[in-house]
Image (cartoon, rainbow, N blue to C red; front, side, top):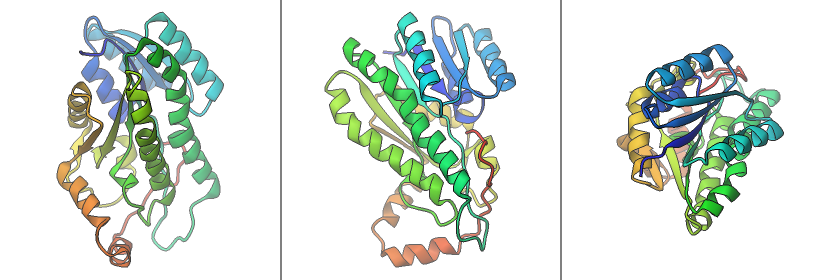
Length: 262
């Protein structure tokens, strides 16, 4: 079954924008959440131009009460078939730095982890009551193994992985599918802000097609690109100190901003 009522956070750019436009079609209702009004309105207009009905919400995923009110009201109007918890930011270390800005670390925890909880928690009970729905979590290959240039980002994605794996068995017994998207490098404003080699990078439109195909098949894990995913999994089997030495030689300049969106 194709979802007809879809919630996407971080919908004003990157993967969220690409998914919104990939799903936009006559008979589809999109609920799009973002923080940049100009970009969000532009995405909503494009989606409406493709025939979709669109509700655009200028809501900060870090605001638990505002998210619960907006999502619950939207779900009451037309129960969501699919929720994509996508919104996120990044931060990191420049070469030679030892610690990340404590405020940036707390900001990324609020957006990438608490923001995910604020997105899915209002929908768990109603979806289970309907015995229908799908929760999709945007993780990252960076969540498979900590990277020395982006500790806080890796921490948040590892936590999202663990949470999705933890709730999957219980929710699927109640008729709600749970999917974890483990993405590699995708050409988005977030990844464009990172100065580093980006092996096997794909466009946001390519990523959206891969993600949608996996969601349509109700896969528990949607990982891409496959070669990079397998290399990351292999790294878990190698001696830890060896992997540490290899990764420590990779030169990366990650942004310090707290407000970049995926």
